[in-house]
Figure (cartoon, rainbow, N blue to C red):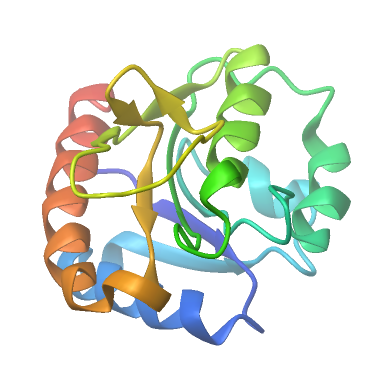
Length: 172
């Protein structure tokens, strides 16, 4: 498998904890962590396989660091690149836009020809609406540390196995 670029904010404590769990499953030699707060176009170009950590802020917004990074790649073709998305949300506090950030990011990637993998079931979540929902699935792994922390490890483990299969299939 080609090296995976995991892009996330190194300042986000909750996200960093989830990334550590993912790296444990993928193996340190298979990933490179990239701090999206300071990432450049050159950092992005090094990979074909990506995991983007995309928490949802406020009423369904991308974090500022993603808003600042995406213009760096908005004119790029992402054809041939594969992306897996995960992010946190609060389905009780923000049920009308639970993990919208995942949907915003998936749309951005797909409009530029990139492939999003790692869809997960909406079963087991209680929310009103989400831009990340397509049919009965999310466009990535939805994590709710606030309300379902006990399910996080199992969800990550299952999701990482699927993402790894998808990346391996693309790299053959």
